Image (cartoon, rainbow, N blue to C red; front, top):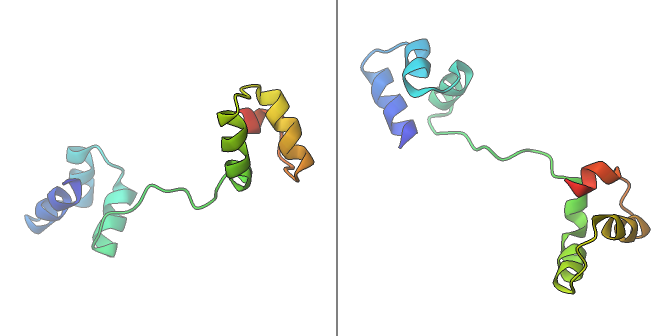
Length: 89
């Protein structure tokens, strides 16, 4: 596991810059892992606003609706306030 390799290199006296170069990770990532004594997560803190409509959208998708413009109009009617472009993505 990458975290174990980072800890092993640090225990051998490697600098954070050297570890970052060797592993291909950013120095800030390596520093944070070592401070936290665990690897970080790559989950985004914020969720897309359309996630609130996921169950509805799944149902409509399973019903065969594949038209993003139509789905966008439907979720707007249910309270979605985001842009069409963001919704399609």
